[in-house]
Length: 477
Image 1 (cartoon, helix red, strand yellow):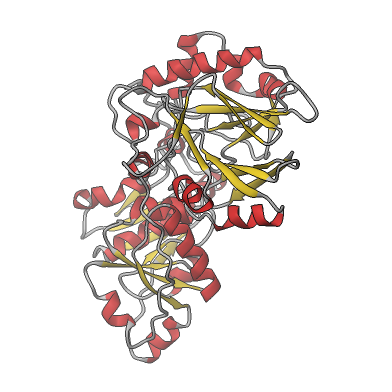
Image 2 (cartoon, rainbow, N blue to C red):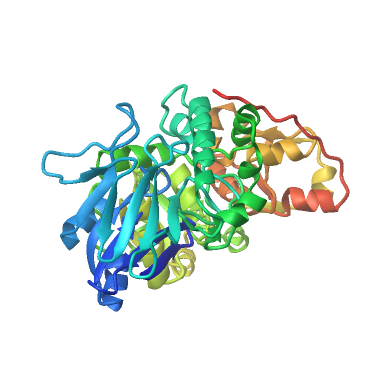
């Protein structure tokens, strides 16, 4: 058996290629919208992709399962579980085989047994893998977003992201029962999860690429709880705010993903750039680091730094209905960022520019803007500013600057009308990166007195300054 893990750092997402050494057939599990890496991986192993499946209807990226199966001429196998309210919707021309609990299929000498493990989503499947050439029992399981290293999939997304009301508690109870079903499997069973550290599909995912069921029984918090009521309260408490694009991803993945754009947008020169920046229907993303951005940027641009959180904040803050322009360090960097945007359905990138556009902009006598930065000592002595903390609710509850106002970064655009325009706004997060994004958003919407607390709450704590805490709000609805 051949096993390859294909991991996307930006999404903290793992896809898998499972190949048969006897027949050169291959199964791909949970492919992203960019299907080229799976075709390349199969070619490198001299394999033919004959089966494509996924563990569930994903929320954090657009699926490539249907396109990959069509292009490769492979069997498309999708969950038929979940009940009438939440299932895949297939068009008249789409051919897919629906999998249900207890089903099995083979890929050469590899046997795949299907188990229904609802909780994270109603239709979620687990795939047990047996290499029949060497064994008659499963060697491992692809757990998708059901069971992670050190954590379990969150059961609140169907309600909080897809807005299927009244499903949080019932999903948590289904997740508890699914975990109990794992008792029948041995400790040696390897687990290959669909996400790693940094994913918003759980609370505190581990960074290891795989684990064993025995290890998780010893150290995964969710497998330590034997009381259903205690588990429901624990799994729903402290879940991070779901990125705003999750609901759209779930709907598109359920109904059908549009084709990914094939063309690469043009590089814009200094003559074309000013007109593009001035359009109301266009958003310009400056992907430089917050420290560099704050020293000089083109007015109206939004700072979303390239890095592991780029897709999360782009998906949460940018509209799929608006044209996009990127400022990136190089063509290679622009290509990588445009790919990341396409994985979450932000397809309307009409152009890009290198960082040299700022020099040419300035040389053409266009002004650059700046965002002032403040440290904890000065902030502690300031009494005429509104402090906005854009961290997650769990961070805010654990401790915040006295007198600050909490507005999660993902909710900032909806709160603009509630903010004073004639008072200094000091934006804070934990270490200065999210607040830099927030400060650029405020400036792009006409707020002139914006300051970034670049050291963030971490610096405030290190300085020994006073803090406040808030009791967490726990809800099952």
